[in-house]
Amino acid sequence: MYTRPVGHGIKPISAARERLVVSDSVSSFTVPSSAIEGRSRLETAQIRFTLDGSDPSATVGQILDIGDRLNFDNRGEITALKGIRTGVTNGVLDIEYLTADI
Image (cartoon, rainbow, N blue to C red; front, side, top):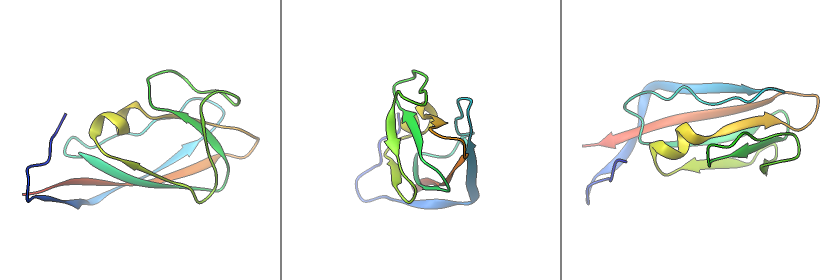
């Protein structure tokens, strides 16, 4: 896991955004190798997600509603995320990946 040095910040990775369509099968992000943090927001429909490596279902996992945000403090959290929609409409989770500003 990356630990940010004292006095250093983070910055967006140029052109490193992803729109993850969360459907009725488990979905996860494709994370760039330089990403250490991420900021995301859910659009279109409610989903459930997990961060512990287990698979969510329509009834298992934490709920994320339209407009809710998820901030990822480290790469491990981003790669561990798994999501699935709760209803008949796919959710869309937009993420902006961040890297160290050294």
